[in-house]
Each structure stands twice: as C-alpha cells, then as structure tokens.
Length: 204
Ligand SMILES: Cc1cc2nc3c(=O)[nH]c(=O)nc-3n(C[C@H](O)[C@H](O)[C@H](O)COP(=O)(O)O)c2cc1C
Figure 1 (cartoon, rainbow, N blue to C red):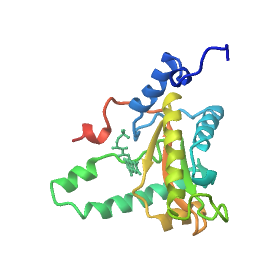
Figure 2: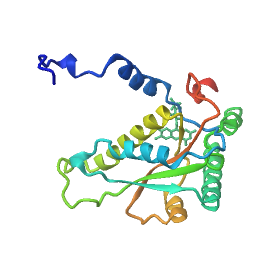
Figure 3: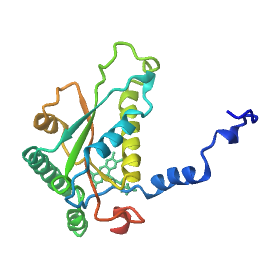
Figure 4: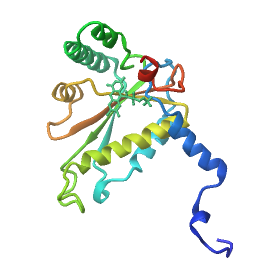
C-alpha cells in the first residue's frame, strides 16, 4: 500500500479488469458445437484450477474432476444421452416433440474432452455449517462448475453442460462409486462460435 486511505472503492479492480470479469459473465454460453482442436494441457489446468478455487461449505471442497478423453467411453455416454433424450421426447406432443428432437443438446463426441465434476458427500466427517442443509455439498460443487465455465470463456474455451443422463448408468461407464454424485457432465473445447444470446432462446 502507498499510504493512501483505504475505503471500499479502493479495493475494486482497475476499470479494464472489472470489464473483463463482466465480459466473461455476459459472454459465457452453453456450447454444443465444437471445433476439433485440442485444448492445450496448461490451458485446461488453469481452467480446472479456477474451478478448484470456488467457494465451498465449511471449506469442504467436495469436488473431483474426471477427465474423459477416451472415445469409447464417450460413445457410451453419447448412447446413454440418446436413450434419455428419446425417453424425454415422449412427454411432448407433436409438433413440440419434433422441435425438441431437432435441438442439439450436447457435444459429447465433437468436443476434444469431456469433464465430469463429482461431489463426495463423505469427504469430511464434520463439515462446519453443513448440519442444517446437507445438500450444500452439491451447491458448492455447482459453484466450482460456474468458476470453471467463466474461466473457460476467458480462455476462449466453450463448455456445455449435459444433464440428460441417468446417474447410475453414468457411474457405471466412468467407474464412479455409488456414494459419489456426478453433478455436472461437461463438454469442453473451442466453440464454432460464442453467440450473443443463449442457443435455446435463439431456437425459440
Ligand atoms: C444444471 C444445468 C443442466 C443443463 N443441462 C443441459 C443439457 O443437458 N443440454 C443442453 O444443451 N444444455 C444444458 N444446460 C444449459 C442450458 O440450457 C443453458 O445454460 C441455458 O439455455 C442458457 O444458455 P447459456 O448458458 O448459453 O446462457 C444446462 C444448464 C445447467 C445449469
């Protein structure tokens, strides 16, 4: 510090850095169309490190990150998605069923890498502040996902969340024990584009 009096405003980032934070927030998109280019390891490491700096109940850090590059595993996840999407289509009448089925809701095989973010509710025996709301472990994991999503955007990397998956089957494919919750299955890669508005909004 240079001896200047400290007030609330002096703790703010400089203007350009503030604008960069808001830009990442406003220009983040859920991405389903990817270019095949791989994400360099150091870029991926920075993105996952940002996730790891998310807030967590009682500093529990209940998350783990499973990198899924293996194409055979991803094919199995894609088959699981296809089955679930078709099952969900039964809840719509025409013409909404066809509209739903025409939406692209994942990029599992096109994205160079998939990442499953999990939550371990048993990570710590006692977690400060979690007695009243045990589900705060999952909330914490979602905070990590959001950090990851924003950091990815700043790196020009797109992330797409795929939740049209049945958890027991996903656990089976990835070898995840039954007590661990797969919170987010993400497709990561360089996007074809970052659109101004959400894809679902654009598709009406
Ligand atoms: C918990 C969660 C689950 C989601 N699951 C899917 C999904 O299975 N498929 C998909 O295409 N988008 C999924 N999304 C992305 C949303 O559709 C998207 O965030 C929303 O349409 C707004 O678009 P934007 O993220 O580009 O602003 C999911 C988002 C969240 C937060």
